[in-house]
Length: 96
Image 1 (cartoon, rainbow, N blue to C red):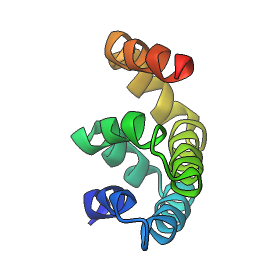
Image 2 (image 1 turned 60 degrees about the vertical axis):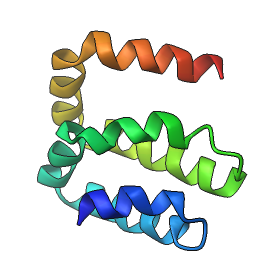
Image 3 (image 1 turned 135 degrees about the vertical axis):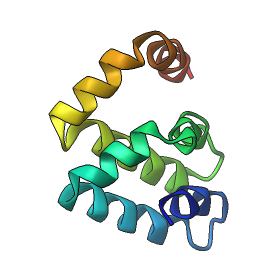
Image 4 (image 1 turned 180 degrees about the vertical axis):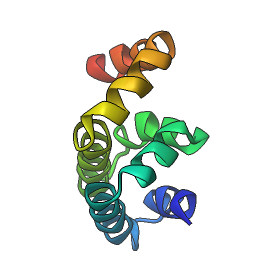
């Protein structure tokens, strides 16, 4: 279900609703953040924040930020385990 919500960002009609659900779930449940960070669909956020639709783009970035800042221990472990892959994509994101 979580992956379906992330893929929901590709449909502008439901993207903002999917983002709200993902952020609320991330705030309340550490296990959901852990699952999303370890899922291949997490990499979609690097592409989503570069979408043409500003509302969807900014909402996706807010969700991306929420996943990496809400549960700091989970995020720290994820970043430690995936340092090279994450920061190579993150650098491209910062330059966009």
